[in-house]
Amino acid sequence: MMSRNLQSVLLAALLAAAAPLWAQSEGAATPAEPAAAVPWDSLSAEQQGLLAKFASNWAQLPPGRQNALARGGERWLSMSPEERTQARGRFKRWSELTDEQRARIRERWEQFQDLPPEQQQRIRDNFKRYKNLTPERRRELRETWQRLTPEQRERLRERARQRREGARPGTPRGGN
Image (cartoon, rainbow, N blue to C red; front, side):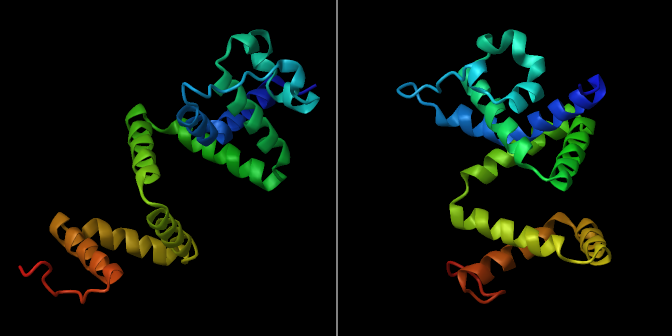
C-alpha cells in the first residue's frame, strides 16, 4: 500500500496532468452532447488506486471531471519515471504560485488557445528553440529583454511581425 504522502503527491501530479484535459472537456461538451459519466467499476485497478481519494464521492462528480480524471489516470500510468518526476516538479511549481500568478497563466493559456493553429505552432517552435539555447544564452536574452523600455520592446515585436509578413523592417506599413 502507498504511503499517504506519496498518494497525495501522486494525486496532485495526476490532477496537474489532467488540467489541460479538464479545460478541453469543459469546453468540448455541448448541451446536445453532454459528457458521459464514467462508472467507477470501469476504471482499471491501477486507476482506482490512483483516484482512491475520489472513490467515496465518484458518482457525485460531474461527468466532465470524471472523464478528465480517468484520462489523467491513464496518462499518469503511461508515463515513464522521468515524465512523472517532471510532472511532480510542474505541480510543485504551480502550487507555489500566487492566485494572481495562476490567474495570469490561465488567461494567457486561453489567449493562446484562441490563436490560429499556425500561430500556436510558431510559438511552440520558438519556445523549443529557446529551450535548446544554453542556460547562459537564455539568461542573457532575458536580461536584455528586461532592460528594454516598453517602446523598445514594441519596436522589436513590430519588426518580428514585419519579418513574418515578408515586409522589410523599417518600411512604413499602410503608407504612414
